[in-house]
Length: 79
Image (cartoon, rainbow, N blue to C red):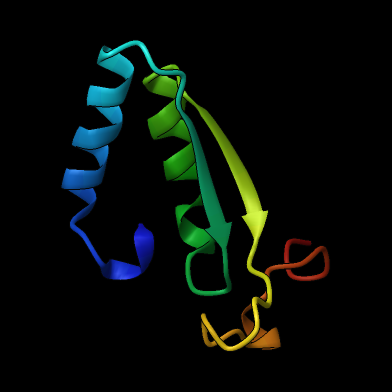
């Protein structure tokens, strides 16, 4: 989560607090070649919490994220 800039436990606590305060929370997961094994666990985790999760593609944003085409999870890789 978040490119390793914070501990996942801290992020989940923040999400849970936002929900406790009445905010509607939607979680986005960027799917890359290195995290495809986490798709189902993430879906199950947030479904159990009653939260929406969206899976979005890793995309080029210029020179800000070290984007590489071989890390893009596309239709061909998911087959």
